[in-house]
Length: 255
Length: 362
Image (cartoon, rainbow over all chains, first blue to last red; front, side, top):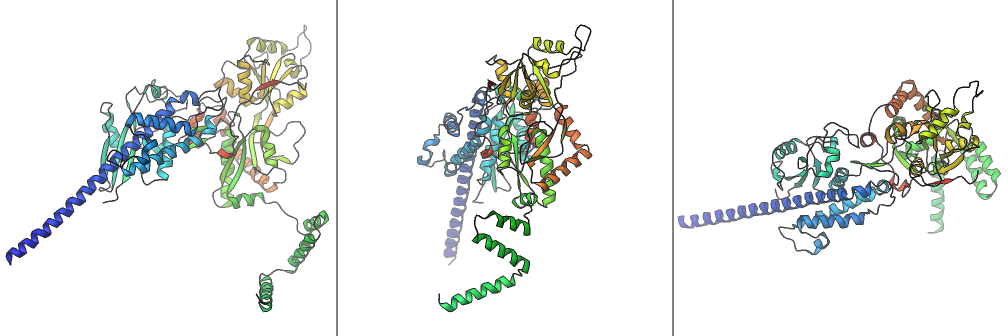
């Protein structure tokens, strides 16, 4: 009798342990997929910003009307920059097998972000194609803010550009973002990113830093306090300084 | 449906008609309307209807009902009244003194209607603003339009009371020799050269650029008989043409004084305002700028006049003037903070500053 009870107890414990392990594994997989998706989204918005930066001279060309910087041209360049950065070709994403490198969530969200970005470039055509107007304020930051907002409004994942001294109050960091930005600003420029479970594990937040490139310094460099072309005081930044970060917030369903 | 059913339907209809409480005068009106339908093509019937129940336009009520006001603005920049459309974090925006005025009008409309009213900005070519208003696409437009210009009045349009008192025409040049020649011509009378030269004569023999369809063109057509006229599609086109020394050559650009002042002090610093011998700027006219509406938009005109009157009374109009004309600022920042979005589909598909050409009609 005692042996029988012991055996049943052991079986119950075994089943429970197996179940707990299974849940833990599921959570771990979900987190890993969410984290990779967040990283890829952050890299995609960074690639989009780079494309705008590379076309800035064309966009601001005072002598040209139709710049030819159409949503389709932007998309091609975005895909190419993203491929260089990640080796992932968004053109074949739909047929690529799901893996830890390209999670199912990423397969759904990356094209959605490309679409949101194209819509931003489409809506900016009237501004971009003005002839006789030089600086149009269609720059990496304004593209990034608009694309992030448009994507967030159409998805359950939140994308945001943030920095410690934002020019746009809507990009003000929350407490968590501010602490991460302070931590990142004290570290050398690297491919580091911060990934943490927040809200008692209900969401995953990934913060990926953006660093100032040479071209950024025309508006954000020295002399500090002097007004740049758009009327904001320059930050006195140097190449490689932390410019801000892209925050991706992904809700985790399995918790 | 049988015979009885039809009867019952008619009975119900009659009952509903009575229950709706249609009064005898209303029945008379409906009777007239029925006669009107039977006598299609007879304009007298409509006149009769108007006589019995004149149709009062209530464009203010219409704006409240649709919760939107259709506002026209020139797509050509008239800084500081209308700056070029630019991108911001919130999307494409347009800003300027005229945009701030529109914000005040829209705020007042929202209070009047009891719910938010959204401005729908149509950025169209200046010369098309009157056309769009006449076609009913706009409720009003505002683009530094002078209300006291002695030209043939546009039929069917009316102006608000002025929101800007310091307008008028002046000229600029980038050639020091032209500036000097004009100064010489404006020397006070002396024994050697008795009498003063008429302002218009000081531009005699010079190539003067004006923007097509604006006050400067009307002024030039009426007064500058001895100048070579160059018609430009926009002020930026005049600058480009003059700076490129393109044919036709341009000695002087004639335009809206506050706009030219803004340009030579902040954007095109190699240009200078035409000045008198004592160094004071040469003004050719004085003008007031007003909001343009349909002549029959009586209620809207009263409303806009009251808004402008209150802004003036409170000193806000003067603050706006100082804010946009005197203070140092960068317009992209103001566009981001307080600019208005515009209807992308209602903006000209591809704004081009256009070009300049000699006025062959002269």
